[in-house]
Length: 133
Image 1: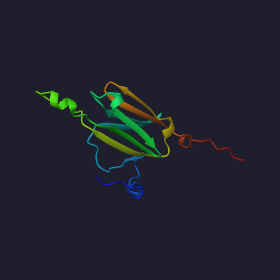
Image 2 (image 1 turned 90 degrees about the vertical axis):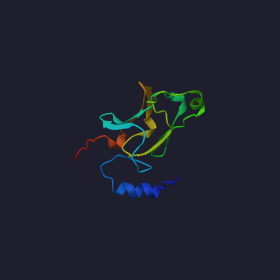
Image 3 (image 1 turned 30 degrees about the vertical axis):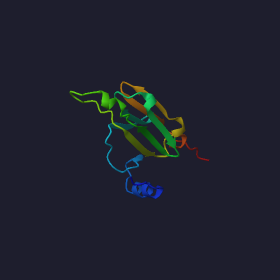
Image 4 (image 1 turned 180 degrees about the vertical axis):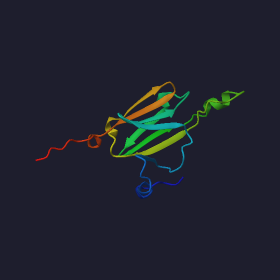
């Protein structure tokens, strides 16, 4: 596995002017994720059907959001599947978040099989009124 350096992220960000965040791997996610911005800030909705919130690790370090789940293989040997439609595969997602979002006020919840991570706008991102002197 290749390690991504700060220079790699900086170089890639020079060419991505439309995005407020970037995946660290630079490849399309193999795990279902919806990411959207609205009046409240930035929201990630990550499919976690059949997963418990205790098994998911969330971390924020500097401007990196990381979501990690490691599949336990113990149950695989006990079951003989006739059909298999629910993917409970491991995933390791990481995103570089733009400074306009306040990561220190990020919240996370599980709702209807979705992990929802919300980040409000930071103070510097809000419009400011200037007074002419």
